[in-house]
Image (cartoon, rainbow, N blue to C red; front, top):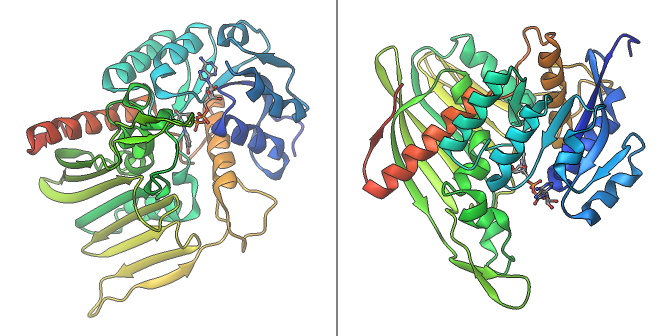
Length: 379
Ligand SMILES: NC(=O)c1ccc[n+]([C@@H]2O[C@H](COP(=O)([O-])OP(=O)(O)OC[C@H]3O[C@@H](n4cnc5c(N)ncnc54)[C@H](O)[C@@H]3O)[C@@H](O)[C@H]2O)c1
């Protein structure tokens, strides 16, 4: 590790599932060999004081707050990561950027399109560095796919599929939580929850839909409330968007799938594109397998075993398999490096403009469902 690594002091607001993952990523930062920035988790905030207790084992944490304004008033914090329910994104993100600190926001970056636009515009006005959490593009398979697609190796694009699938909601006895309530998750439901994972790479590649036809499903309308009763469960569970991307004046079908009720799946991220010259298929179901074909007299799928091919080098041997904690760390390295102006050619985290663009898609999908029709978007 170089002694010149820049130290960045981070505060976390929202000490839930994702807040703890960030602490864990920072805790083994020494595994990164060439990241020019080192984060230090200094402060944690949660309205639920009990949620802070887990962080007492993290030696760098000095401040434990139950009001986010107390954390934002601290002088020894440079960057704030916020991981709270979607209905709180706008107020808290605006408070962060107005406090003079930079923001690593969680998806979907506001409960809806209007909120996302307001956050983006205020951060831009204030000149704050803001990015949005989306870790799957940091997987070796996603990196390989992005490289093939952006190097124009596919020829004329024939079709694209991007999907994020899990099955945890199939169990009707699973108690309600905020992600299953529209008031907190947002009217877009599963699209707010899983959508950036699905839209991020297509948007970065310039595959921006011009037409959307959405199939939205609500399956269970009530769930146990965890207190012996039942509660309304009013979010969209599954969303399949049949979209058209216009490339070189030609329409290309692209399917975007976000499902909480996909039998057999446990957080399966899928990205596939077929072109006239070549194509790829990648799924976290087979995390080290990358499928490709190239046009020939006959076409055959070739299977490549991927190793630990990450943008920032690590101590981990190149033959091993990366997982969720590794890509979260890579994503944070990209965020910190880009903030420092030293990202270079590496893939950068999702931008506020991309977050706004993904909300535009979900707004069009809701409209498509309401009208039971195809909705046009600007290309
Ligand atoms: N990038 C990913 O892979 C990924 C995965 C899961 C969740 N998320 C996103 O992370 C965010 C949080 O999701 P989660 O699963 O961690 O939720 P969670 O319910 O596990 O945690 C949210 C925490 O926020 C706290 N909180 C609520 N209001 C607060 C306030 N005003 N101030 C401080 N803390 C407050 C809650 O007490 C809770 O501890 C959401 O935006 C979600 O979409 C991202």
